[in-house]
Image 1 (cartoon, one colour):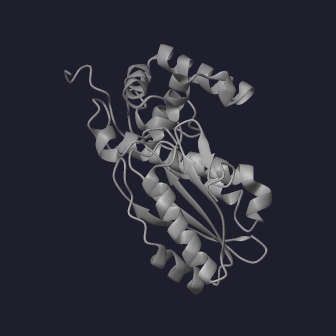
Image 2 (spheres, one colour; image 1 turned 120 degrees about the vertical axis):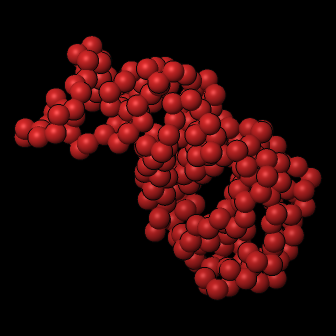
Length: 254
């Protein structure tokens, strides 16, 4: 891509030049009027209609505006969606994969990862210090947000007290595209340290299919036996796919 067509990847100042409340002492190139008007229209539609009023590529444009203030970001938004599938897939993409996309540099990666982190914190706040079993939908929303689009398997453990209030949400292990090492002894050791009375296990399948493997079932049974020996309850093991999840409890595996 020639320099004349390359995206300008830089951090946007706190205010756009057309929104700044005080005179700007440093001369900077102005946004073309068509670009400024386009961005204003997108912002107005978002503020009046919410995220449902915008398709994925326009939502992504809103995120990219701050990182690339002087260029049309629509081509980059579409290129990212073509590569990573959807808005969530772009936000969840590993930085090294994002960086290998033409037009993506440090500023773009930072903006995307800030939005991703904000989504994770917001969804986590909805289950923190609450009775998890009565906030099951919020727990699933959190797991979908943090795990559904990961390129590798991650195994998380939710540790609960006697009232099923969340004590800790911890990543126990991270693996490859189709395997994650899980050590029941380490899970029980951590449960005792936290004085947990119950557990919920969650891991994702990057393939998108939440059907448990024989290894998933065998590992879960090992954890059940270890938990029972310590009078700890395993409420469920949930596998997160791309668009659906599977509950071991609901499917009769527990």
